[in-house]
Amino acid sequence: MIAADSDQSMRAEARRVTILGSTGSVGQNTVDLLLRNPQAFEVEALTANRNPALLAEQARALQARFAAIADPAYYPALKEALAGSKTETACGPQALVEAALRPSDWVMAGIVGAAGLAPTLAAIRRGVIVALANKEVLVCAGVLVMQEVIRSGATLLPVDSEHNAIWQCFDHARVETVERIILTASGGPFREKAFEDMRPVTPEEAVAHPNWRMGAKISIDSATMMNKGLELIEAHHLFRLPLERIEIIVHPQSIVHSAVVYRDGSVLAQLGSPDMRTPIAYALAWPDRIETPTKRLDLAAVGRLTFEPPDERRFPALRVAREALLHGGGCPTVLNAANETAVHAFLERRIGFLDIVETVERTLERVPGGKLESLDDVYNFDTSAREVAARLSGARMPAQTDLR
Ligand SMILES: NC(=O)c1ccc[n+]([C@@H]2O[C@H](COP(=O)([O-])OP(=O)(O)OC[C@H]3O[C@@H](n4cnc5c(N)ncnc54)[C@H](OP(=O)(O)O)[C@@H]3O)[C@@H](O)[C@H]2O)c1
Image 1 (tube, rainbow, N blue to C red):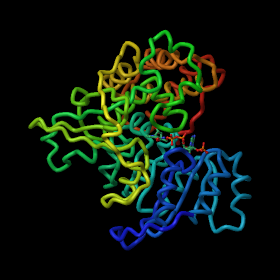
Image 2: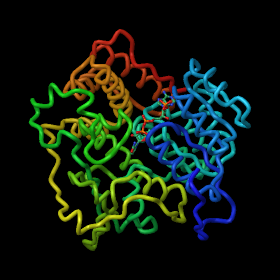
Image 3: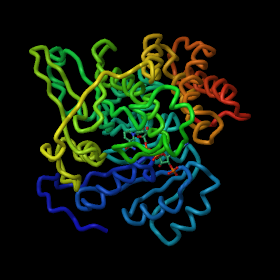
């Protein structure tokens, strides 16, 4: 365990936290910050899907009260690994909701995909602080989720580095002074590749992001630039801005994390080395700030910051995501579910890289995204889209996600 931080500015009482998806990339970065600040935080619950060994290790290191594993096949291993500890255990999708419902002041929504919807909503409904990394939750059910945030009085803090940057620069008390926001995009590993040259790329090449170490799904999304499309939808819900006031610009160095343009022409941006521990720390300690070990930005060493418009001919995912949002209703839900299914098929080498966005677009043509008025609508659009996308990507079974 790393030594306690002596930061006296932290609140006297420890903040009680829960991490949904603690074994993932965002989850592990959050755990790292907790271990560096043991006096400031205590841990209520941790969750994973299929990694009982790491979940148990984290639960022991953080003395978590509860550890839940989504896939019941891994429950015996979790119980064995936590035998003799004080951590209670449970399994199955409902156990993740139970983790979110347990008494904590702060919840990290760090699960990947729409599988995080039910536990994230459960945390939001408690009216606590929810740090949102799990962008698919807002893509598949943005209007309904934001309604719950308002109804419950929860505080939704964006963790995605771009939205976290905008959050830090955004004048929340004078929103009418904001003209637009600028989301930066690294462009991913294939930023300079010709369209046809992307056809034969392998999963290994596609997950190798030039600036960030992340989970497989978001890494593939970054390579197709669907990630920026999902973030466009996320930003629309978080900051309540229409599409025409959200600009996307490619910035390969990932130093300027995003910016807010004000009506007087001022542009406020947040900068930093590309390390997720900075936005996670901002959310973790908010409204305070804690120390992080992230490499400090040396602008002279960086030397040049470059910007270029995104190329939607080579990266059609941006257009597809924008159109889905413009069509509204269940279209973003269909987009998200089809994308999850297609990325899964690509990672299993059942389809090629360019087939991912092609599958999403074909699914959107086949599944009409009508009105989205309830969570049942979300589940129905999600299930239909997964079935169609799985058929299109040649799978016998759709990639299953139990959203409930
Ligand atoms: N990684 C980043 O730097 C980053 C940056 C910005 C935003 N985000 C967003 O944050 C979210 C998490 O990304 P990540 O990169 O941390 O993903 P990741 O490394 O793949 O981790 C995902 C986490 O969710 C769990 N999980 C996966 N499928 C699940 C299911 N069906 N039910 C319950 N739990 C499940 C995983 O458990 P197991 O470990 O047991 O599989 C793991 O704890 C994504 O929405 C991503 O877009 C990530």
